[in-house]
Length: 119
Image 1 (cartoon, helix red, strand yellow):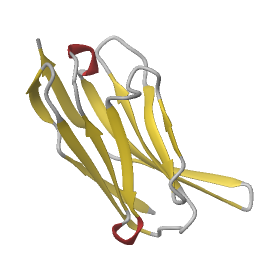
Image 2 (tube, helix red, strand yellow):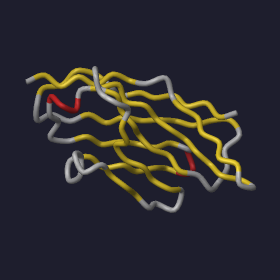
Image 3 (cartoon, rainbow, N blue to C red):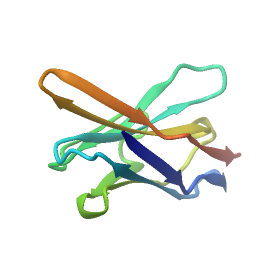
């Protein structure tokens, strides 16, 4: 089992910044992918950004150039620096940890943290 604890959400004005953190604990495999997803009211769950243990990143087009994902492997923690926030970034943000072993993919999710951007 893997436990994920998120922090850093809140209320911010348009154009502002927030930094989310997600600390993983438990049965951590060294080869894994961690990432952030979000769900806005009335919308589908969507990928925001992911990062492998080797540092390879992916971003949704809507956040490229504004958000930066990073991680500290020693602390099993992933971060999401969000700059130039827009009202459409308002959502519950979820941290995800996934790993694959012997063809089996295991994934775990955090409880979510609310990000609200006011106009």
